[in-house]
Image 1 (cartoon, rainbow, N blue to C red):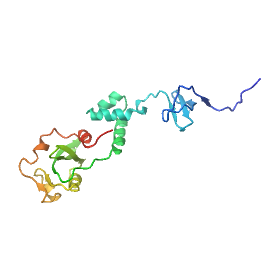
Image 2 (image 1 turned 180 degrees about the vertical axis):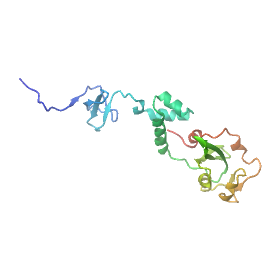
Image 3 (image 1 turned 120 degrees about the vertical axis):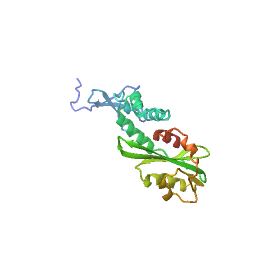
Image 4 (image 1 turned 90 degrees about the horizontal axis):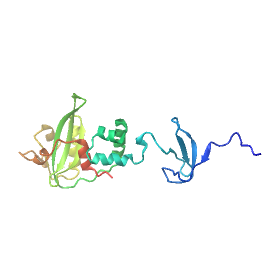
Length: 216
């Protein structure tokens, strides 16, 4: 009679239909259970541990693509979190991580731009902020924007990107701050010179992010 060893391994061969979620290998073994009692598996090919059915949807490997899709469609933060059944905090972290991988396309050189700013606040009216953005006059597309405190530093980030693109003209309103950060030769504040940017709907940072970058 054959007796089993008391110190036998805790890993058991899994069924052939089970595949690794990382590398799709069939070389899978059972590897204990989670705190919730769900079976954990270990891939002997890539050494990654996983379970078949996650309770929290943020673990889904396709969740980032869904976030990108909903962002492009203009769905709000809370609406996206509710549809995907994940927390708002997790969603914001994912958006920041996705944005960090996006490369900014080059701004067209030698063009004319319109720059405008909008005052807003975060949380309470004492925390004032500026949304500053630049519009290329010919294509009427947003080419640069910045959100920050109501200081020249916030304006300079947008203006500098236009100057590096050899801007032919930069049109602004008569806000005095622009006089100190834009060269007189390319600065223009004549009447109706910012009609294109003024006629656009109120700027939305998420909307401008979608226009400025191509999410894939």
